[in-house]
Image 1: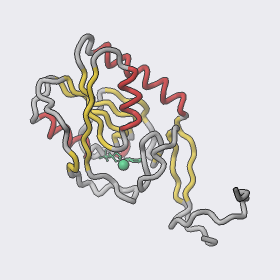
Image 2 (image 1 turned 180 degrees about the horizontal axis):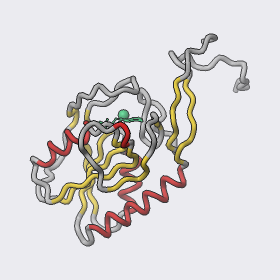
Image 3 (image 1 turned 90 degrees about the vertical axis):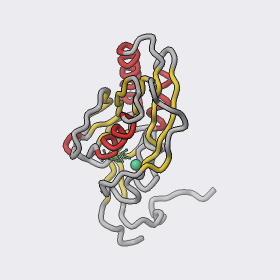
Image 4 (image 1 turned 135 degrees about the vertical axis):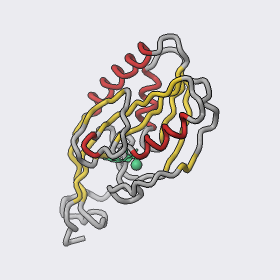
Length: 194
Ligand code: IMP
Ligand code: MG
């Protein structure tokens, strides 16, 4: 194995990326346990149907689901997202629908982050037409400063400032989802030596 030294060239990227941990993994897990307890308390003895928005919500959903006692089922939906940039186009498109009907079910939409609110506004409209018994929203992160659509979440893990974050499911151009912490991503100027 070659020895890694600081003089070695870094992988070529258009801009130099750096990350700073914002929410460490232990705090995330602790908060999810609290959220799960609260959710079960609010819907005691009721089967809960978690609907995760792919792909950002996967780790949050799987951790949350395992902390909720009693009957829990899950399904996934996918919508178009940011692509390779940190700015949303504002356009939402359904790219993968649910496997099963949500009619008459107590549905909790599980999303990684509530940013402008455009995604959730769109999804809630779609889901409401399908006549669930109840429709609630759980998000790991909330960036209220960026809100455009009048949407609010019933369960919020952490309220964060207006910064672009990655990790614990959240990506930048499909990377960083596997980070176990939530971190702020900073894009610096291009690295001259790249
Ligand atoms: P909204 O429609 O603007 O609320 O954005 C929702 C989606 O945008 C989320 O599900 C994320 O996929 C993505 N997003 C928003 N803010 C961030 C961020 O800070 N980091 C990574 N993805 C983000
Ligand atoms: Mg995304």
